[in-house]
Length: 190
Image 1 (cartoon, helix red, strand yellow):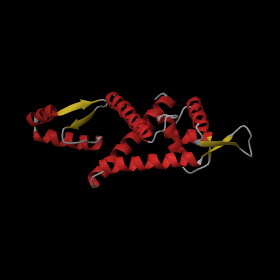
Image 2: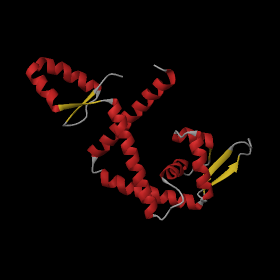
Image 3: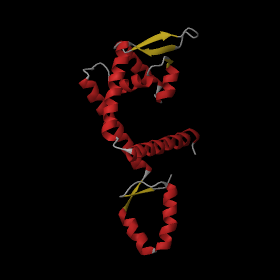
Image 4: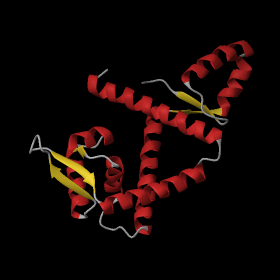
């Protein structure tokens, strides 16, 4: 993907808006177009991926801080995210892998830590004894509720109105689209 997305200092523009802007800028003239280019900085998808990695690390730090506040020291942020992914459901490891996009060996390790800490129950499936069903224990449900409460507090601090909600939805849609495109490229070697 050699395409670059321009992000003017006033906000984010998608590709369709860039195409419309390109047609408009041709009509305005070369001088205005050069001036507009100086106001923009170019952002590559590689730089976006680096930003997503940094944001993920910051979020892990935030989860770690919440676990510390809750005096939970036997699991880390990754295990807490698995706990949140399980939710109220009783599900198989395969279903959990599909939900959270975890690597199988990692999720096995996380589930072992959660079981050792009495956050989850692992029960052999009635139909297939090789498969296990997972559900939260009371301790797991309490931690999940506390983490969700903390997440809601952060969300209220960040979400100050309709525009913030709209920005969040746009960011989610953009990242989801990148996930789909990058996933298909890696799977089908496009």
